[in-house]
Length: 158
Image (cartoon, rainbow, N blue to C red; front, side, top):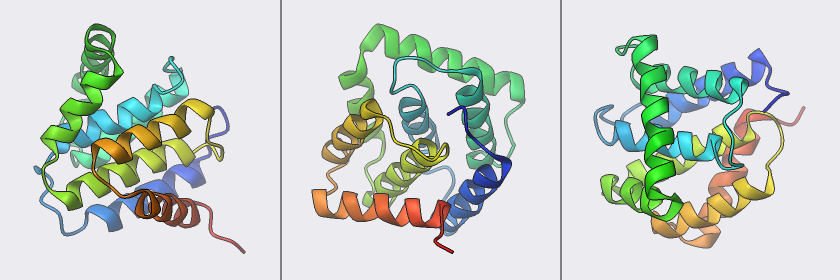
């Protein structure tokens, strides 16, 4: 995540606006935030840049209705929950909170955006995509298509 540019962040925000445009923002907001968090933490650490991107993502999803210090507190709580419960339990918790197929696909898109924001996908992130697609009941071919869609939105070909 060290290569994150403001341009990439702006593209992620614009894409997220399109993904969530007609969706009730209260529908699974916490689960979407946790999905983004899980992708940011996929490599086992949460760098300062990843944390900043995650806060920016959370601010967008919540329409800046939550104070910055509360968002930082939320990230700390998510880190504690992941440490206490483990990956499988947190992924299952997110999946069960997103009962709507549209919300699950949007959460998957958001995870992709978080992963792609630095221009490269790490092995741990690729593995998490597989786990999320399975938990979210997104068929493999559709999951792959979503990843291509998000990549192309964030990094359009000239």
